[in-house]
Length: 219
Image (cartoon, rainbow, N blue to C red; front, side, top):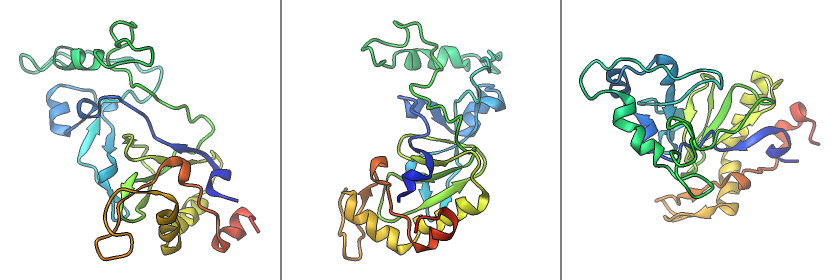
């Protein structure tokens, strides 16, 4: 029995298809008069380190499907979001091969946004490429880019279940297992440098160990 048997979903939080335009410094978005509801805290894969999340960026992100974009008046000339960024966003390619403009998609839409209606609001995030296992529990509902996939447990999962799973994922046993099954991205897998491995979401099928047996009844 693996983690995948108990997770609602393991994969990326969402895909903007233009991270450099969607993940920005908080002061920059504030200058553009972006509503607070549209600039949640965000983290990229390289920001998931030492079992903590770096929170120095915010994402241009609509929190709910029914929220409508608020076109605020710019504070300074040229600081209108539609004027500054709509061309970049609208020029993104779609699955059909055209652009957002050509397919009449809103320029501020995210490229892919999985629905997690059956999942818990919390998420266990991890850096896709790292030398060690740095799994972090996010309770705040922040945004992650493609290089920081998430593990979403079922909606009825308890805090204890999240913490027990987190303990196993960050164990030395899990680190050894991941180094055996994941792709090497450089470095020394045995020596002091530490190999950087790509933890592809399909590989995060870590077998649940005795520590989890009491809670998940896997043995």
